Length: 98
Picture 1 (cartoon, one colour):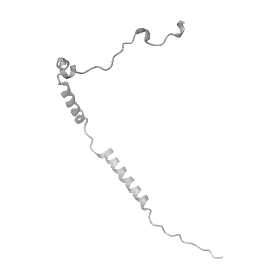
Picture 2: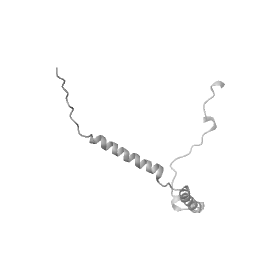
Picture 3: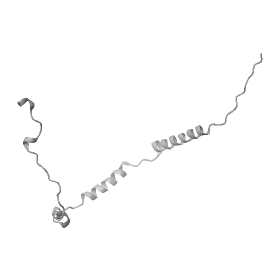
């Protein structure tokens, strides 16, 4: 009896797997850089911008008379009617009082 050893053919490199691994390493590296090493904005810079907007809004002077006396405001019409609920229609009837 003879022992036959068959040699397996060498396959080429799996380029798709190598590409996926390479892209994964790049994504993890970029995420790690932005998470751990990039300079974060100081809280004072963020808050000062918001305070500037808030201070500008607080300095606005609104005169209610000038708004209500405006012709455009007076030309507005009400299309909905507000119904005031009556006291007897509020809630359910008590089932134990019958």
